[in-house]
Amino acid sequence: MAGVHNHVNFPEQLTISPLLPRDTYSSCGFWEKQQLAFDAEAQREGIETYGIAGRVWKSAYIMASYIEHPSTWEFDPSLIDKHLSGHKRIFLELGSGTGIVAAKIAQATALSGRDLVIATDLPEVCPLLEKNLLVAPKGDSANTQVTLVRPLSWGSYDHAINIVRELKLVDDSSGHEHGCITHIICSDVVYFPELLAPLLRTLLHLTSPPSISIFESQPRVIISYKIRSLSKETPFWSAFGLWFSFEPVVVRKIDANNSLSEWQRFGSDMEGDGDLAFIFVARRRLESFNWTIPLENIDLLGGVGARGTCGKKSDETFETLLLMGLGQ
Image (cartoon, rainbow, N blue to C red; front, side, top):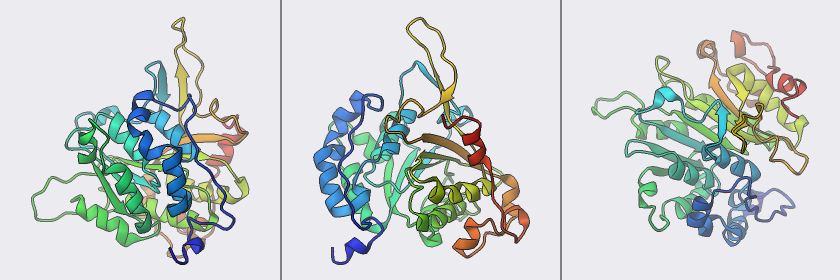
């Protein structure tokens, strides 16, 4: 581990401790099976070896509640498009860390043998993912058959295209059935300013040809996000909104009297610490396929190339959502 504390997963003065689920987030069956991989002791060991990647973060628990929830909850948008019923589904997660969200997807979404969950992170974090995801809990061997672990450093076109080629998403003469990424999952990935442009670049790689076909349904990008520093994080959303349309997930619930509650932003009743939490669902803007993605990260965050022009610009969707009260 020589020099590891200069790594992005070991920021200076790192002092974090394990985070366990509140009752709001937890699903008893899942935690009973997975507790050895994600309990406090496992997280302590993970933090020591992998830094921030070894901890379960709050947004992961919120995402888990979106993936599997009580039958009395109704979401808009929902996780799974109805038109995907019966189709091959490929969930690709960025910055998987411990792998808890990927494990939840594999356990909760009734995957068939044709479906896949791909957990990705930096190459040095992949051993943690393999440990947590590819060693099946008792009675859950089927989950390991639909789960892959692959390296994907944000900003690396080679890493992204290697996954695409492995999944036979690029045209070839092999005769294999081609799939397409249907969901790109991100939990607590908007944080360090120096990673915002590489993250956006990878999202563009995964939603551009040859990763996808412009004639097929575009993948949903689902981001679970907790505000920590608006001044540092807003530049990501200002650039992201130029290339992707996005909206917050809202939820309503049926009470004991069988009455529906009002729609409210999902996450608004889960904070408890003063920080705002969201799940955003996004799709690539169709017109953006004709735009040139700039090579420099500073230009990408500055909106260069978006809307087909070289000038700097920004999108105001995120700020508008906050002003409209969806941040309350």
